[in-house]
Image 1 (cartoon, helix red, strand yellow):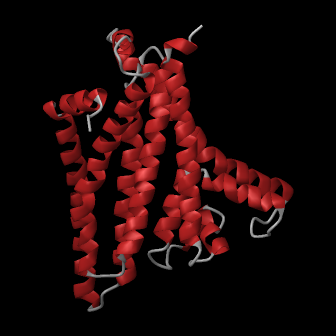
Image 2 (cartoon, rainbow, N blue to C red; image 1 turned 180 degrees about the vertical axis):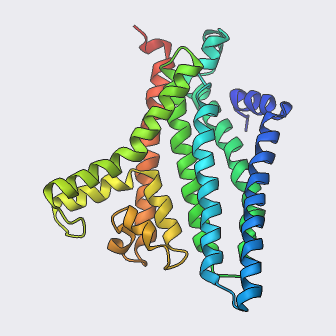
Image 3 (tube, rainbow, N blue to C red; image 1 turned 135 degrees about the vertical axis):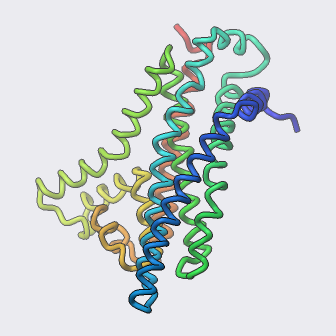
Length: 288
């Protein structure tokens, strides 16, 4: 089985440069410093009170997960935005398109390259996340669900970055467009559903057509499934549910896994649409 040439080239370029290694190192060092400093405070509290507050330890674990998640959201668009526009700026896109590789091969090579690079961020963070197992309280299933939402979010953002890059001639324009689209998708569902609820006084807990529509709109938001996955860890994260209109409580704790995976499916389908548009955009046969 042959390796995609674009994927191989991007991987070689990435790992010959020290930028990704330094970025990952700084990324995890910052997480570790934050975790150790907070745990030091918890240890002092344990010594003073002679009692271990497991809820506070789980809250710290959630904070580290959230910081990690949002750092990935901030970094990924900037990396993926140069996928196609960078080739245009180097005037190499037409040359690549003149080879036997199809536009799908080019886009998929870029896609899998960025997915593998960003997955390293998650894998490299595992030792820090595993520190919570010293105290218990988090199951492997719940941790696995969180990492599934990580992968889904990375795919979603990378697909937006490739789409933005395919319709832009300059990388800086593609980067700005990526962040605009991500901000729109990540926050418009919350603003929209909140506006409907307040304007029309609709209770999202009621099972009527509008309530169901609002629930599905929320599931298109990667933040919603991420917070639902976090809310499974402990019962003290009620504020997480309130932010997203008690969606976890609506579906029930036992059904929240199904709700999360429905959201993952919807977001992957939307990401596939972005990838499909990017393929058509660079295909010479569809240029006028």
